[in-house]
Length: 522
Image 1: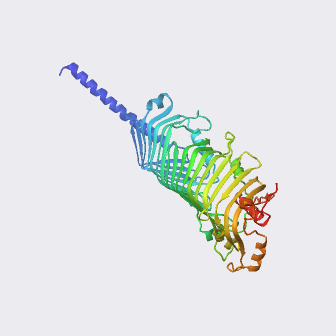
Image 2: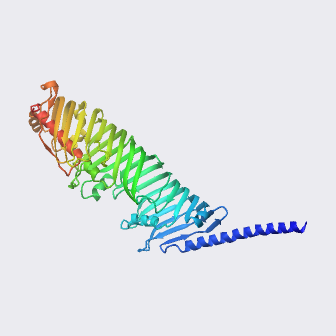
Image 3: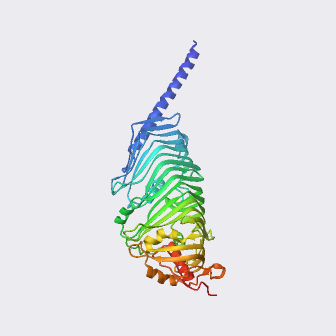
């Protein structure tokens, strides 16, 4: 081999050696720098790990078995812990880091994280989350972020009870930008995201729990499968722990689907929600009210007031309820079973559920169902959220009803029975937050009211005879076989719900039509 060729080979080998040595040194420097950064995290944040791999050539960084612990700055108690199999960064751009003063990488992956968060209701978590992002001085670009098979648990600091839990959570997000120059309402920006999770459980309040078997979210649709919202106590136990009456309820539905949704945030605080459509498939709702518990005498707002008073701007274009069922039970007497009303084959459409002045349309609710087994019931209800007087119109058309079908509610609760046939009843309530007028007409035959003795089974013949003197037995003597109500003003009890107000109007209209002359004043 010639001297010249030897020099070339030696030079090339030397160059390769220097490159390799430089990469080893650079890798060591980068690794030490990362270790030093981790060691010098703020006092309330610690990060432990088994090993740290750095590949400068590929731009890859991997933390093996990291454990991140965040403590309260003042309490020094653990606020959150995240334990992972690994945390990896791929294709980290050193050029952008050195010359453009930003962090850019192709993929950030969190593998099987186990997240435990200790919720303290006294802590300002919104402000804390906001400050975390605002303290990031560099602009961060992440092409793809993924979380694989995560489990999350949120615990109450006071008693270690589980407020929220879920498992098998998978999450992806693409084209993320964290930049202090973004609009003040945004902490970060991104192009798309997907999330799926199993066995989601959430403690809504001291009394109610929510659970979802499967949650799936993408850019346009949110699907909750196996949804339930239930009182965590049984009926007797609930009555023993409350001081004023409160509904015991069980709501279950195979699926809730939310289409074309959008959340608005003011920093980390939810400020708005909109969606084109929410669909509840075959919801099954049972409500039980123990009237033996003291009345709750707080003021009950109408739905228009509730919507108008929300801190969140809400704009739901349409809600659809498909093939639902509602059972209402009310216990009035200790030694009797609860009275019951049922609404089956319940289909409803709710349009313009909104409190934004950008949507001036009235809220409209249409219901088509069967009442008490087989009686068709149609409801058309509308109100204007922006009306400070809370005006509303409630129209109902009740089809052929065997009066004795009502006895499962009337007998245990009112100690009376009904006989006869209500062939058709129509009424319109025109009201507001305090008063209303009802226009009712009804067609019926062989109607009889049977008052019962205290034992709830024997007929009180004398009182039954007296009360039926004042009630027309049928409507055949009326024009078109309909007897009309002639009610004036019905006063609302604002300690009761809107449904109590509807019942008071229907009751006043029926009494007027049956016990009056069956005619309406011009």
